[in-house]
Image (tube, rainbow, N blue to C red; front, side, top):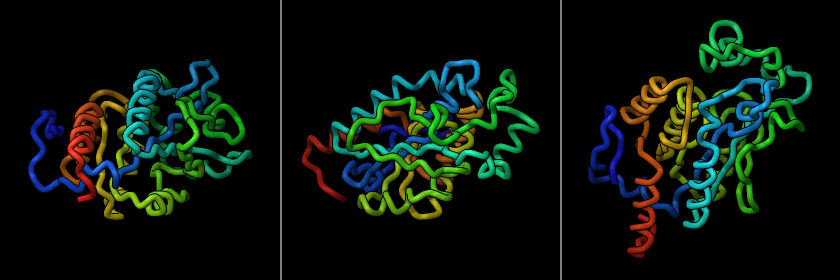
Length: 235
């Protein structure tokens, strides 16, 4: 299997078999919801780059299900009243200084981001029976204010594959948090999108240097299928 180091795909060194055991793995997909991905003009915080990967995330998730790897959708949701997110550093910085993309400044609908019981907190990807949803995310990591850690441990999983948006915000912060809790982290860079290609590459570089493995979905699926076909069990 190949991983991304300094922008180059290179063979994975020995000593990482425990990262590649599909039986110990869950996919943690971040914020693929309407608040970012709805195509209508009143989308609160549009992520045009995120819309690019909806279909491929669906395909990747299905391939994971077929292998027996659970899919956990993590969704940013706020209660009506917008009081839970107003002090979020991410939201204040985005509204006050910059946006997801410079050409897309914060909209007047920004306060609807992740609003409960609306399409802004509804998944924009497939969520068939058997998938899990963690919908109490209110900050930039998938762990803060959520029961993701409990879900992972209840499933008996210690390898965490990160997909979804945004690469250089919630994905990166979740990767750091997961690493601090001793999860084995894999970033599927082609299954994420961020502010720009440069920002995505920078986030992937930080993951590969300090947190976990940075690879592509096909590399990971090929390796899982090879190991499963060879009858390998837990390592």
